[in-house]
Image (cartoon, rainbow, N blue to C red; front, top):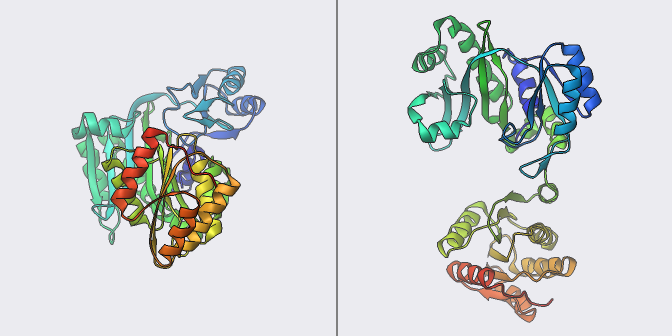
Length: 384
């Protein structure tokens, strides 16, 4: 679960991290009123769950309340990476002398959190890592001891931070760690962490990613989820308990089990295709969930073929087959569907699909190959 900038900064403030004074606005009039209350120069920032807001024109400086209103009028309603801007954050503008990066991220390979800092703040840290990895200082955080002050001093030295800022920098880093841990987050970053002309550190932007599995411990964040810009597909997937992630390819994948889903996507790539999604229907999925999963996949206009790979242990293959037929009855589509059913009641499942003239396969490699061929050839789907 990704948080908006304003949500992340609210959490930062609770843990002692200095942020600019600011308020959220949903109309140009509100933006003007907020700018008048704040006084002086302000920055109007689009609140969307996407990067590149500045390049898209979603971040604008305003010298007066009237300019803040004009900026909000220009930003509200604009599209940034397919997301519509419905809110803007109006912050006091800072007099920036230097921009730093400070973040904590979960290193899944190392099975621990890693503190990262760089003097090259204000740009995507991925760009810095690719172009100049030596500019990023790192410190692994012991899961039992947590982030220690000496580690903050070490990375401060590595990025050649002014010694006069060391106490502030350490306090902010420890606050960031506390914010991440208390929120069940897997990422918390400040970019940029500004050094102001007055010699103060200020978190001008913030980003947090919260682990969905920890939301039962985070009732406030769970309620805030309603504000997130989830697509209709994501909302429907969550409603039916499906694990769904949209990707950029053209072969829709429906699988039961995360590991099998990853293997199915890999096999699709091996035969020259590109998966359009990750979708795990889970164990014991009945016809209604299968139908919901297919509706989600078929709603994606980029999908040119669907690959269904089901290992029927808990999940019965005949139930999956009925779900497929039900979905196509609800959402007629000409997209070709390749189905591999192995396990409990597989013969009955194959019989139901064969009667409807679906493409079936017995092995994953055969299914992936036929799905890629069908997508590339534009094969018509069976009539159901």
